[in-house]
Length: 148
Image 1 (cartoon, rainbow, N blue to C red):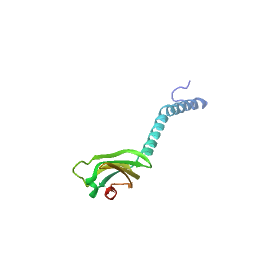
Image 2 (cartoon, rainbow, N blue to C red; image 1 turned 90 degrees about the horizontal axis):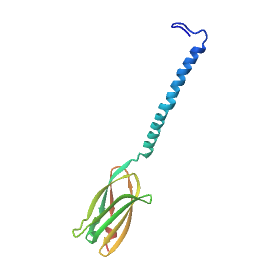
Image 3 (cartoon, rainbow, N blue to C red; image 1 turned 135 degrees about the horizontal axis):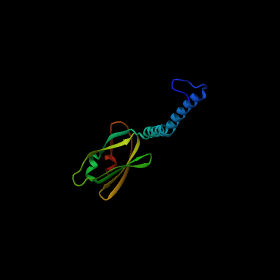
Image 4 (cartoon, rainbow, N blue to C red; image 1 turned 30 degrees about the vertical axis):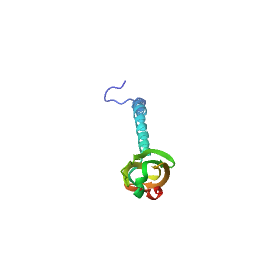
């Protein structure tokens, strides 16, 4: 036993106390801090990976002179051939609407709008491709394709 203020004769006792403190500190790091740091790193990686820059675009559908013939219109949107959860369905009724707008919030990229229009007794299917990115207005001009 070493009295207060005296150093041990050999360095082993001092070395063992430093090693013991070192070992305790490493155990705390290994058992408590490392898992938290790992979870924080995984969370940051997941957040960066899943971050998608969504573009808010306005889609204007132009029916022109064909508006009086169109009873019902449905537009489905596809990204790389896969349907996305955005679609528009409108009953146009007796009062012809030559154009209307709706907004989409979708990631930037190349999209396809598949349009089904009921004109009188027949249904026509059309397709339009467009690029989404930034705040933009996309015009789907269907007038010529819906005329007889």
